[in-house]
Each structure stands twice: as C-alpha cells, then as structure tokens.
Image 1 (cartoon, rainbow, N blue to C red):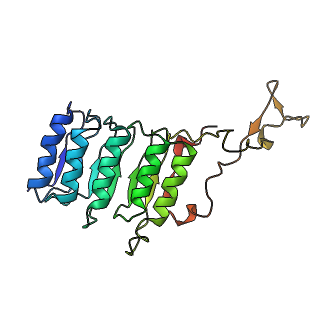
Image 2 (image 1 turned 135 degrees about the vertical axis):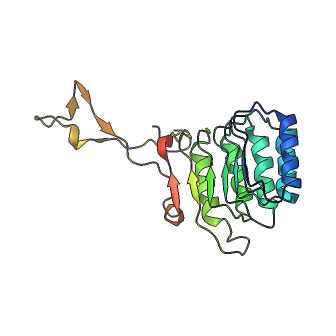
Image 3 (image 1 turned 180 degrees about the horizontal axis):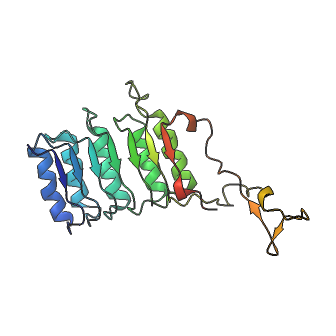
Length: 222
C-alpha cells in the first residue's frame, strides 16, 4: 500500500510532474507527496497537479512543492486545486521559495478565503512584502468561515519574506534607543555609533491572535 512518496531533488520537470499527477488519479492510498527542489515550472506541471488535486483518487494530506520554480501562475494553479477540492483533505502545503510576489500572495489569499482544510501553509522565502503577508494573514483568519464550515487553526510560515517598510505606502518607523547598549555616560552610543531598535512591523494586530502560529522568522528585515 503506497502512502508516502518522496521525489525531492529528482530533476523532475514539467513533463515529469504530469506523470506524477497520474499517481494522484490512480493511487487512492497516497497521503503524502514531496516534490521539493525540482523544476516543475508554471505551466503544464502545476496544471496537471491542480486537476489531480481536484478530481484525483488520492486523499493527500501533505504536499511539499518548495523550491519548484512555480512562480505566480504555478502557485495559483496549485492553490486553486486545493480550494476546489470539496473533500478538503489536504492539511499541509508548502510553496516556499517559488518566486512569489505580493500579487501572487494576494491571489492565493483570495482563494483561501473561500474555505480550505489547510492547517499549515508555508510560503517562506518568497518576496511577498507587507501587503502580501497581510493578505495571507487575513485569509488564514477567515479561512473556513466564509464557506460555513468549522475553521481549523492555521500555522502560517512567512519567514524570509522581505517584510520591509515601503516609505511610499507606510510612514517611517520610529526609532528608539536600546537601553541595554547605553554606556556609562548614558549617551546612547556604542563604538562611536548610536544604537537604535526598530519596533515591530505594523501587521494587523486584530487578526494575529486568531492564528494557531505565525512564524515570522527572518521575515522582519528592516
């Protein structure tokens, strides 16, 4: 009985992904599929996986597509397949390191708001920015409620996602001295330079408490 397939770093291209998608149509016992570090691209491969997620026999609960060169279009195909599956069996999805930007994150967030069975979404190592992160946080909070089904808590990983302030969109962060680094004279200087600490990023505070876990990690570069 085939339950777990790991094809990470196997040099799989779009053609190979189409063949892998056939597993989801024919192997009903398959629950976990790892395809990370392959070059699936954004076309035929993700499209075939989308169709398999929607109508395949397999009841996948775990899908790792990290570092697969999906881009915006490929990632949207995958998430659309997940959200279109009425069985809502997929619990963990990784799209880390796929070249996603804020627009891609906002598109994905829009689909997640329609309801999903996900309890873990990894979009780390994508340059989605503050706007993309905020959209995903909102979607994680709303997921399931819009579809009228009980909402499971979601673990959202947005570490390494370039959450830096854009002065064109957000006002500059106030800078404060770090009390721990003041010298004996209290002048706030260390090695001839004034030490400052930036406060937390202005992510929507009203939605963060509803998340099971939000892993910012290295996302908060300033």
